[in-house]
Length: 276
Ligand code: B12
Image 1 (cartoon, rainbow, N blue to C red):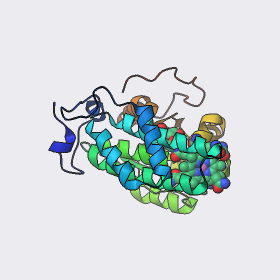
Image 2 (image 1 turned 30 degrees about the vertical axis):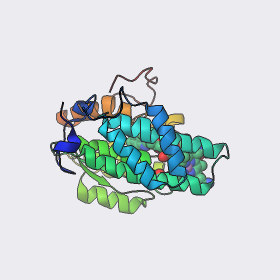
Image 3 (image 1 turned 60 degrees about the vertical axis):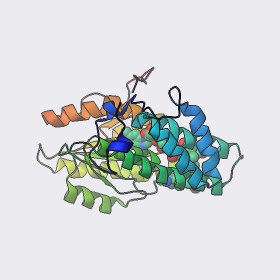
Image 4 (image 1 turned 45 degrees about the horizontal axis):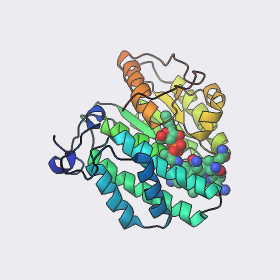
């Protein structure tokens, strides 16, 4: 069994996402599959203390286990942030603990993305960012890293982008896909304004030069209709469903030069995710 850590220099072309699943290197210290919930909790405890070296060491051990990118990002790092959110909500940790953990998780994602690398170029471009007053971008960053791993050219604009500046980036970078996130009621208006502005701009483009608009995040999950009515093409629940269901659909639509027809905003939530 080969393992990417030993064979690929940092940032070099890596294997497709599917092939990153289930590789168990001989030197892995985990006898069975890593216990993602337990690791997420352990990381959360270390991260709220601001213990970045211990978090980095634990991440290295996790990455050496050979588990897949989606498991590392969604189940372990996403699980870490879920604990942070719960503990903050319960008053068990303070704002400093929450901020320390968010910053460390962003650094861990950077490290993980170096290890998982980028795939064979697909000639497709994705542009991701938070609209006005959107500060929650950890989930978007996860999508960005997975897209890059799948060979996409990725432009990540970070949080709180003004609408005109975002539109300018769309005009100049000509993405095939634009992804936005919305978690909090405070970022709702800005996100809707962004979607409407993107829709207006898109209507000025000749067919064949168009792009898809996708949204996700906690607020979208709870109130999908706002985003559909503003003109978004699709939503996706989380990283796993994005990677396994939405991305293949995007590839198909872009390949055929068609439009999004499936209504992901009203579709019942999938009961179980396929193994990934
Ligand atoms: C970390 C955090 C922050 C950090 C964010 C740091 C950063 N760099 O992102 C900071 C400190 C900045 C922050 C600020 C605030 N936060 Co906050 N925050 C959180 C927390 C604890 C974790 C969020 C997170 O990163 N989760 C991990 C990621 C991986 O999960 P995710 O974001 O859901 O992403 C996944 C999916 O949603 C999906 N996805 C996400 N985006 C997209 C996009 C697309 C296109 C697709 C397809 C999929 C997709 O895929 C991802 C991977 O699976 C949550 C608690 C919680 N339970 O979520 C609160 C939470 C989201 N925050 C909340 C609030 C209220 C705030 C503040 C208003 C607090 C304040 N008083 O200032 C501000 C608002 C900022 C703003 N205007 O946007 C509320 C929102 C409630 C609401 N509905 O309004 C929450 C739910 C906490 C709570 N229980 O009250 N926050």
